[in-house]
Amino acid sequence: MSSITVQPPKCLQKTFVAPRRHMFGPGPSNVPPRILAAGAEPIIGHMHPEMLEIMSDIKSGIQYAFQTQNNMTIAVSGTGHTAMECAIFNAVEPGEGVLTAVNGIWGERAAEMAERIGARVNSIVTTAGGYFTSEEIDRALAKHKPVLFFLTHGESSTGVVHPLDGIGDICHKHNCLFLVDCVASMGGAPLHMDKQGIDILYSGSQKVLNAPPGTAPISFSERACQKVFNRKTKPVSFFLDMTWLANYWGCDGKPARIYHHTAPVSAFYSLRESLAILAEQGLENSWRRHKEVAEYFHEGLENMGLKLFVKDKNARLPTVTTIVAPPGYDWKEITSYIMKNHNLEISGGLGPSVGQVLRVGLMGGNSSKASVDMVLEALRDALRYCHKSKV
Ligand code: PMP
Figure 1 (cartoon, protein in one colour):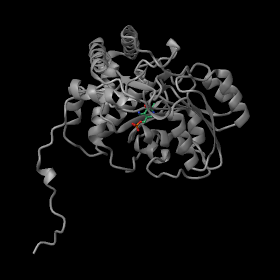
Figure 2 (cartoon, protein in one colour):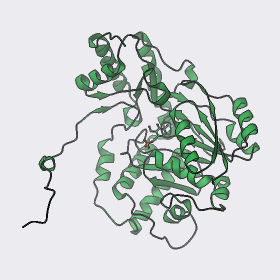
Figure 3 (cartoon, rainbow, N blue to C red):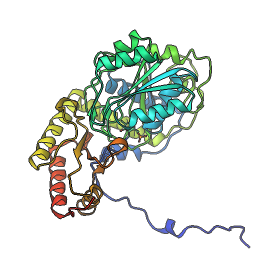
Figure 4 (spheres, rainbow, N blue to C red):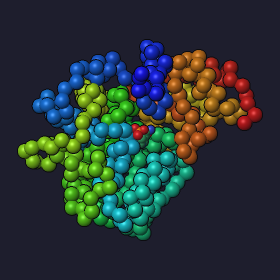
């Protein structure tokens, strides 16, 4: 008699094939065949010399994408949220002050993460679609005296690209580290980690880089390292402890690497390939293309009578566009119609923008005029066929 009480599931007998879709939401974006192929290469050991070389290549690629010379530059095994927690958990000790700039969901999430480790958290808040002046930030830093200030460069929930120039200096004047989220902006909008005085910067693999979700670039300045590596308490997370990760990534100058966790080998292959493509194309070309394509898209939307959610043209994020949800329509019906009839993902709002916007992400290889034409056509079609609803 068999000891098995749970039978092999019938659903697993079916062959799995992933649908082919235009991934024009705020992420993940489409992964081009070259990056998919890199991820399908055979597995090697996570401590094999070839793997250590791949990690070193990834480090160089991130330094280029972030425009930094920081030695403490790695990819975290996990998504953007993992890098967010890595930054906060390592830089902040219980009882210390954190200030977050909230102009969308990411500042809210950073505040929640900092609260969970027992930090004293304050936030400055502005309306969805808005951003902060340097004076507002200066005043809040003077008032709350935090050790860390969090700001989102590309606010994907509202479609705002936040100005960064000068904020690093303001933070340093107040003896505070400057933490920036560039998950939705890296590679798609100008960003200079060193020149802009950013102390901790993190991103994700699945947006402009067009790699599969699951790896997250992060970098720490010398100033950030001083704080991170001179803590009185250990960070709450073993997995995200930068003392371990620094060794694992060969950033601590020690001759031997110690096993910390099994790297997601295939995900690192893909990430390496995505960074190689960005390096080949050139960062400035990528920034320029995203801007031109976004402007072409915005013009097309306005010509259709749709309104852009971010009024200030200079504050529009080139990677993720927020469109005011067309009055009289149910936004969910529009996104479902487009998915069903055009095999194309666009999404609704997130956090404070829920119900207010449609969001379209055109990132990396998806940032092209051909993609824009496809989205405009799908929207035109949806507005013709979706019901004018009661909501
Ligand atoms: N920050 C921003 C600005 C993002 O757009 C996202 C992803 N939407 C994240 C953080 C979180 O990344 P992930 O979903 O990969 O955890």
